[in-house]
Image (cartoon, rainbow, N blue to C red; front, top):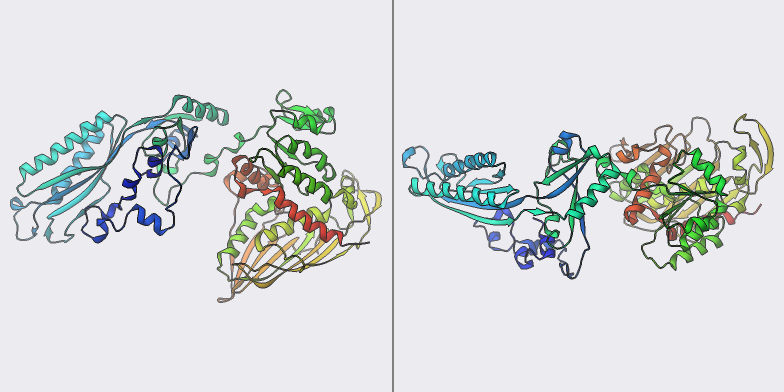
Length: 628
C-alpha cells in the first residue's frame, strides 16, 4: 500500500516492493507464490516499469498537499464540506497461519479435534473485543481453510488482520494480547500450531502544522468556517510517506454513505472542486475608467475589491491580475489582449481571436516568445467540451459503430432573423470587423464538429459562399421596429465539402459536408442537425433551438440517437451536465469547464491559442474565397 510514495520517501526499499506478491498467493503452495508473479513482473507486463528513479533526491517536492475522499461517513453525518486532516493512524497488517489436524466430520468426537478454524474463530472474536475496548480498528478481511470441505475438520486455516490506532503503544499492547491468545490456544489444544507474522507496518504520522493551517485557511475562504472539520485519517495515504520528507497536509471531502473500495463509492463533483474559490474578479477594463466603474456597478461587483481601468496596458501592469478574460468586440481583441500576453499574464480570448490574420499571427508570435513557459493563452472554442459533443466523440471513437464513412451538418443560425439584425449587431455586416455569422456562428460549429471527426484535409476542401440578402434591416431591440437599413459584405450562405483524414475511427476518403444559412430554419426544422454515417450505424444529433452547443442552444432538449443497422433499431443516447456545470447558467457552463481547466493546469480541458489560430486560418481562407 502506497509503495510508490514509500520508495520515493526512502521509507521502503525498491527491491522489497518489487518482490511483493498478491495477497491471495500468500500462504499458498502454488508456483506463483514462490515469486513468479510479483510487483515487478506485473509492472513489466503492463509496461509501467519505468526508468526514472523513484526518489525525492531525483524528483524533489517543496511540499505535498493531497485532496482525497474521506472514505468514511463523518463529514456526511455532520454535514461538513471540508476535512482538515491532522494525521494518519498507525497501521499494521498480519498473516495468521494455524495448523491443526484434518479429521472426518462424522467420526471424530469434538474433544478429539484439533480444529484450526475454531482457533481462528476465537481469534476473530478477540480482535472485535479489543478493538471496541481500545477505540481501535481491527479487521479480519481474509479467511480460508486448507480443505474447504463440508465434511472435513479443517486441518489448516489462514486469516489476515488489519490493526489501526492513533497510538503506536496501543497497537503494541493489542498485538501482545492477541499473540498471548494464540499461544494459549496452542497450549490448550493438542495438535495446534499457530504463527502470527507482521507483514506490513506504518507508524502513525502527524502532518506539518503550517501546511495544515494553509489547508484550514483555504477551506475557510472557500466554504463557510462552520463547514470545516478537523479530522484524523483512518486509511493509509501517500501523504503519510511524503510527510517524512516534506511539509505535508491532506484535504478530505465527503464520501456518500462512507462507502469506499466498492463500486458504490461516490463523491459529488461539487464536493471535489469548489470552483467558486478558483477565481476572484480583481479588475475590470473598459473604454475608459468611468465606463469601467459603470460596469462594476452594473454587475454589482464590490468597487473596494475590483479596480477600474480604461487602458489595457494599465490592466496588464496590475500585479494582482493573474488571468485576463477578453470579451470585447472582435476588432478590439488584439489591442486589448496583446499587453497582457506581453506582461506574462494568463489570457482567455473569446472566439474569434482577432479581426484579421495579421493580428492573430502577431499574438501567436508574442506568446511563443514568452519567458514563462507555464503562461497560458486559451481561446473560447468551448464547444469542444460541451457534453453533447463529448458524448458524440465517445460514441465515434469507441468503435462500436465501426469507422466513420461521412458526416453531414446542417446549420441555421448565427443570428435569429434571416433578414434583420438588432442595431447593436450592425458590425455583423462589416467583414473587416471580424465578428459575423460566418466567423462566430459557423466558426464555433465547424470547430466542434472537426474536433470529433478530424480536420478537413487541406486541398480537398471545396467551399461555396453566397450573399443572398445584402440589404439588412437594423431593428430597435426595445420597440422591434426597423430603424435603418445597411448593406452587408458578409456572405449569409456557405456550403462546404471536404475529405477527412484517415484514422482509427475514420475510413479512407471519408467526407464532411456542411451547409450553413444565416437566420432561422424552416418552421419545425431544427437549427442544427448533425449526422455521422458509420459502417454499422448512424449517429444523429438534433438541436431544435440553436446551433451554439458551446453556449445557449438548450432551450429545447438537445438529443442524440443511434440507428443500429444490424437490428434496425434506434437507441436514445443520454448525456448530462456535471453537477458543477449545473451550478452556473447554461450560457456559462462550457466556458466554466475551460476556465477551471486553465486554473488547474489541465491542458486537455481548453483550446490553446496556437490550436485556435489553426482554426482561424482555416475559416479565414474559406471566407476570403468569397468575392461580391
